[in-house]
Amino acid sequence: MKIETPWIPQFNSNNADELRLFCFPYAGGGTLSFRGWRDRFPSNIGVYPIELPGRGFRLQEPLLTNLSSIVEAIAPVIYPYLDKPFAFFGHSMGALIAFELTRLLRKNYRIKPLRLCVSGRCAPQTPPIVPPIHQLPEPEFIEALRRLNGTPNEVFQNSELLALVLPILRADFSVVETYSYRPEDPLSCPISIFGGLNDPETTIDFLEAWKIQTNHQTSFYMLSGDHFFIHSNFDEFSSYLCQDLKNSARIDGCISIS
Image 1 (cartoon, rainbow, N blue to C red):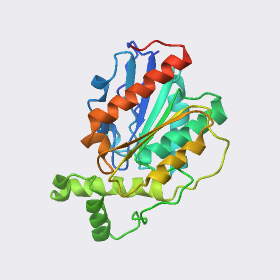
Image 2: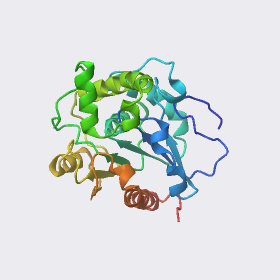
Image 3: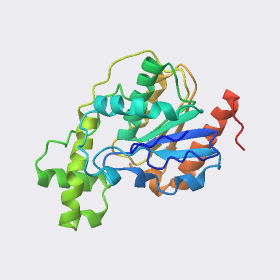
Image 4: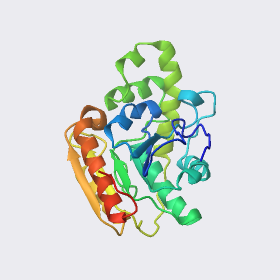
């Protein structure tokens, strides 16, 4: 299969994938957010970050500001790449994208991932913990970003870089903060749930609330670190993620991952 799309820029049709892990970024993130991930997984697990419009190689494309638009755009594009067993991972905003994409694929294509892995995001049916920021005036918006500790200081110190990044961040926070959950039947795939012990955007109870979104098993991990524990505590986090992917592959019985 050789299908080229800017949504999955790192896809290589000449691969040994037995399982494909598609990764969805947090607000302001892109494929670079998952740099080095491929080297931490077995060679037959392909890791494919999703590049949203308006960043990275797609910088000239219009930004999307609501979740429905993103999911509805991704679904038909990603579908041809789901001809092998697959799983989804999303952190923060990416967790919502992965969750709603899983529901849309169930509805439109009657397929499901081997496992849905969500990180750094309260369950979709729970109210947000932090107040919305996407409509704040620029000085207040920048200050809110500083408090979240996800934007490198170098960005704030470089006016040209900041001017490039701010519209992306504002659009992404709009995606998260205008999201409206709609009840549906629970998913029929297992869910892995990851949280940071010092993350101000989540609580243990609100993370555990993901469990009602599946009629299958869940695994739950609270790791040291703040909202971006997936970077600061990557070794521990990635070992649990890889372990869960292997377990799902074994249970499914269609592939063998050592």
